[in-house]
Image 1: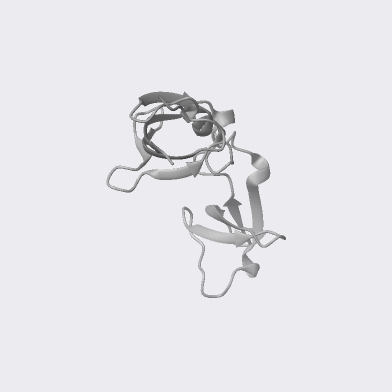
Image 2: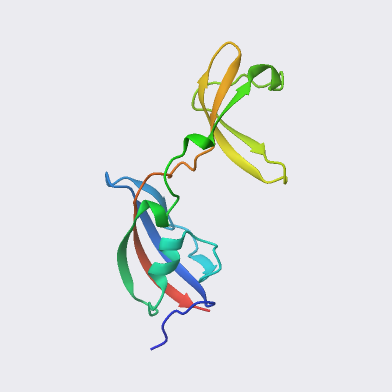
Length: 142
């Protein structure tokens, strides 16, 4: 029986949960997730989990923080002058905004704090600092 190896294109169904049992993502009701194993298209722990699986196989894996989205970092918290915001945007705590870096990469940030003169933006991935548990079913090796 064929097993997944690095470079294979695979399709998987998955259900992702946090330690408290809540679901953060799932392919339920959608097409299977397709990616090339070992290409960095998914988090390392997920990539590693599908290695050597066979079509039809199911497994549950818990991915540690360092193989998921990493630890939360204070370096990803940025204080931004409120005067630099466009006039049509009134920042509020919890609001998601999109910023771009010097290379033009766009990334989401969450407004963590608003003061009279600045806004604290959190650029950490929402799942940073969380171990992730996935139920994975290998549907196809393309």
